[in-house]
Length: 241
Image (cartoon, rainbow, N blue to C red; front, side, top):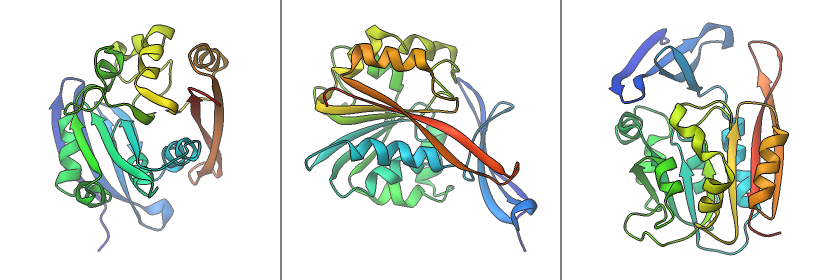
């Protein structure tokens, strides 16, 4: 018997009530979907993951060398993190997630990719505020090795650089904070960001004021509800060409 609807978890957080649910989608021949809501707002769905995956693939494709240390801001359903681990050059992956329930979903295997992330010794799920760590000039993202630099920092938390999950995140998207973030990258390292909005020329110019290069990639994917393509944006910026 197919699942019609099941709420797998519901918890209160400092950002509001967060819930994880699993349901079958009759419009897609009963396909099982995992969805996350924060309050009354839908945050993510396992149906639309193309751009989250491409954030990792496009970002890591710009890197050279072996034994890469990667930071992902925002765990979600884990698609960006798993795509990072598929690159055999990755030495360590620190996934920074501010909401403890999201980490628990993976540790308890309530989401499909949980076992992949929790069983891979390269991966650490870290309960912390990405934006606070990114904005500190005196340390990096690894608590055990606070001055370790990253080869890539991939961010997928806010809806876009101008549409934030939390109003407090807005101060991150400025030259000063991005310069601080850039200081946590190796020479040749990259910063990548997922956005639900179309490419923003103003944000691209902001990235160009901090990094040696930047590009906004439009990621197209099928929306079976509308019958048309949908798009997200992946920004990639680097410390050198």
